[in-house]
Image 1: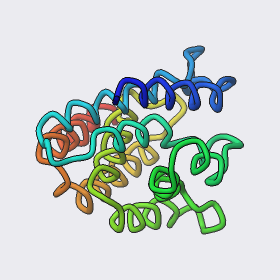
Image 2: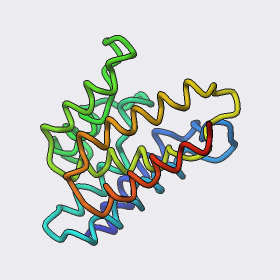
Image 3: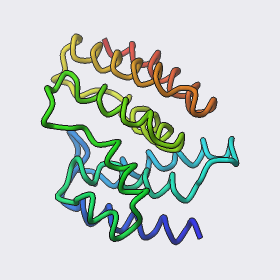
Image 4: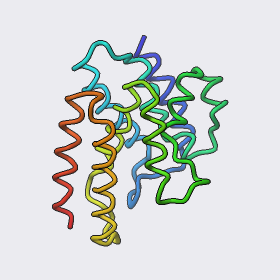
Length: 176
């Protein structure tokens, strides 16, 4: 059942991210993962052809490889190769120059099922909140431009989340 998979994945992610906090906050990072998953669940309700169990697991685990000591093999052993491959696609390749890491990740996501495209858009929707006070207007505009690039490449995955994402991108202008 999806609820059991959710519980397993959030527990795994919670343990992996246990010492991590949201930026500029004392709130546990697990809140970000739950928010991304919430966005994904709403999108899934608009298209019953999508694999909800797969999408929910990936949404909860999406930052494990990038931000913790969890490996591809750990996720494969605990969940499945399909889930591990999806989480890996959502992981920036830090051996590349910083300027091309996101685009490389998005290009890899394009080779994954639509559920992964939705997770990426949900992740950025969740991140398009008030930026840290120390961000310059240039950094804020670059972040918005990155979001637009993600939208341009992935918006065909799901109309509901694409429309929500575009609204968040446009609303982000109020921060600069």
